[in-house]
Image (cartoon, rainbow, N blue to C red; front, side, top):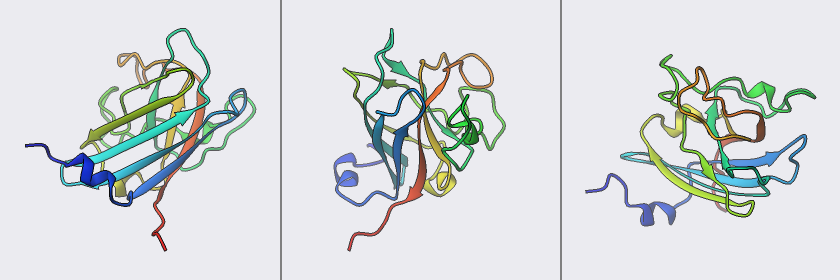
Length: 160
């Protein structure tokens, strides 16, 4: 038996959202991530467009501990801090470690069910896309390269 009925889950309002935007050299990236709290964990559904063409078209994807998608000229998302890691475990066992995004002509869609965090654990945190794939080995963050897009995770608004 599956811990979540994904079809019924997607028919309800999400519990949290992150509007993803690129910055710096990647202003055309945009997307939306939706988080659904379920009995078996959190279902994350993300849709992104405007991703750059890279040799692999695979992008690191993580929840970071910081609360702002701001930074400086060198790193437009410097204020996202490192991966969300409340248990101080090695990478790739951080709560914020997610599967990579696989690009398809500049677009990516993914859904994943994880029990590494609850929606309440990630509210106010940031969701980050990196230019390179995570190698799932290098400490502390998988050598996934420059941050190219970010979204702050916020409680979803109630429908009127």
